[in-house]
Image (cartoon, rainbow, N blue to C red; front, side, top):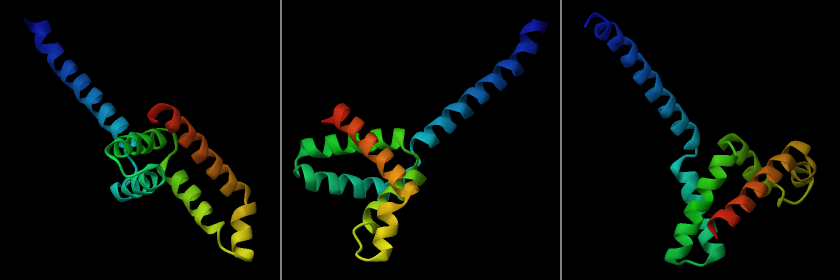
Length: 119
């Protein structure tokens, strides 16, 4: 009886620790804001047809991308892709930047993986 009383606080502490670890992992896997996910799905649907199937595939795609590329890296890649279309010196800086190209390549690899898993 005395042993069971001593184990309860230990078991409770382990349960709290496990729950905290699960919540931390869930937060890491879902660090993309809803608006960013919606924008990705919207663009994906425009490119792949506006069907119910496309919604499911595009939603799956952003989930895969989010599991591979951290949100900060995703923002860097999206900014580089957008700004590289600007004419002149500003666009050239984004087209030739090693950091921008690396982020874009990471995003493209994640999108290729999403294509395999979701489409």
